[in-house]
Image (cartoon, rainbow, N blue to C red; front, side, top):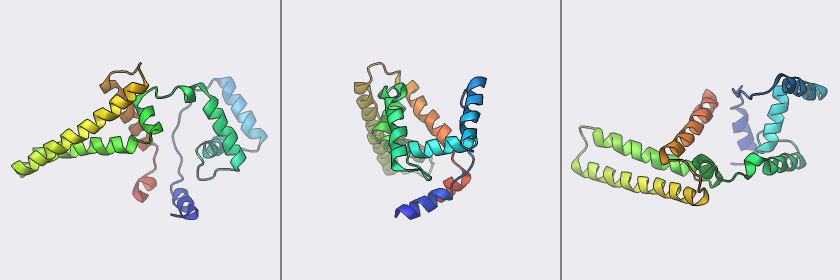
Length: 179
């Protein structure tokens, strides 16, 4: 896919999103003043900042992206490496793989409950579940090597699924249909 095709596809998914930052009244006034001094609304300022931070659809010049990412990299929350299983999966580009393995487990469990499933199919499903679960456990074990202060497995899984729930809640219906 060319850059132009990617941008056109992304533009089709532009929609209002719901984020609720917690700000003091003074910070709200400062935000409006900062945005207003540039002839922007806070939403427009936020949109541009995010676009530069993630090299997004309407990202500005490369030097702005570099500056915003330097800020992010120097922030305390950025340097806390792998503070959750979810952060580990994202930073290691393993989140989609984790979801694929988890989906395999769910689909195979459902298949095994079907009354029409043969013994051979059930045996195959059981093997798939075993392999997918082993992959998930390996991802978790790798994460634990990087974070000695990790929480219990089920608590860490909750962070992954809460992340997914919040992400999906902020994706537009149009985006879901395009994917």
